[in-house]
Image 1 (cartoon, one colour):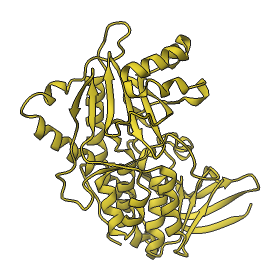
Image 2 (cartoon, rainbow, N blue to C red; image 1 turned 30 degrees about the vertical axis):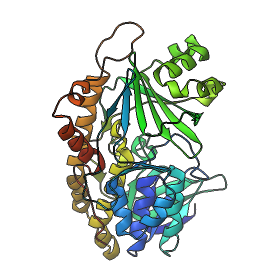
Image 3 (cartoon, rainbow, N blue to C red; image 1 turned 180 degrees about the horizontal axis):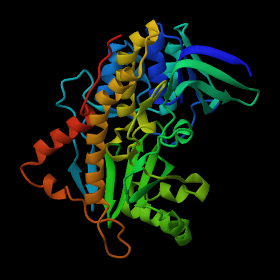
Image 4 (spheres, rainbow, N blue to C red; image 1 turned 180 degrees about the vertical axis):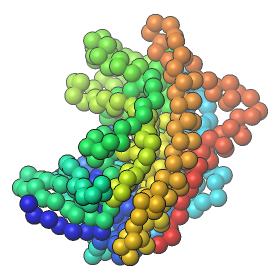
Length: 403
């Protein structure tokens, strides 16, 4: 079997893997990134970019190009509850260059980062290549067995980084099993045309216990319908007509375009998970992003948290990788740096899940009324909106580029 050698092999070409590969190559570290797909063109992935990530791109000199591919910006999204509009969390008060949330197609973002990463000779991106097994010697991970349609081969590396998401292959072939939190929801994703009566500032719609999130795109909406976990089979049994009717009732501007949902193949199920592993590392191996701590869609924080993991990893490990002195204690520093923010974020998400989605309701009303409605109607609301905006826009442990 052929063998390739590198300083760092990153399994997974999502936001965390590509961002880390870019940073390491920029600092002169030899890096190979493995992406199992032939391209980045997959719909219904997280596309919400927060001020913390725009700040990092500004530090790298890539902000202007990022803004070009940003479909939509909002500094205070609205929500519509039973026909009444409410203001949501605000980020416009944040002291950053980009005090807004941007919606960026993930494939455009990854293509942008890859294009710039390829300008650094140490960067090697291998598409259609899947890491399938860890190589171990003397109780240490020393590489990855990988393959594509043409061949299988080995990559020997001083460090393997598992950035391959919530369904991590590398995690499944190691002893790092995640602890699952009980999450009461799943999400149905589908596209709908932008209606003539367009309202691209209302992102969340709640009525009669149903919830839709409408993410604006250049020529369509990416729509998330929150459902009870395991409830997709019942929804399919009730039929497409019933689903279309529900969409139009919850979000009246989508009533007409909802009729264009033609088949169940147009609707994708996202099984929501909220989990984490106890130990993010072992000698020669490190987990980051969703591979270490899967986030729910609440707050749209997943991409941004994963990118901050990547930045902290580059900040802490670039020098040991360049000098060949990487130790297990270096990997432990990454977890010590990033785990508190991940756990705080997950506790916040679990709290919202329990209060918004977790209570029993009457038949036909899958969710109880949102607990935060009363917050929006009292004088404390502006403070609550700013605090929520800070949590969403910046996070509990923002990172900055050091190398």
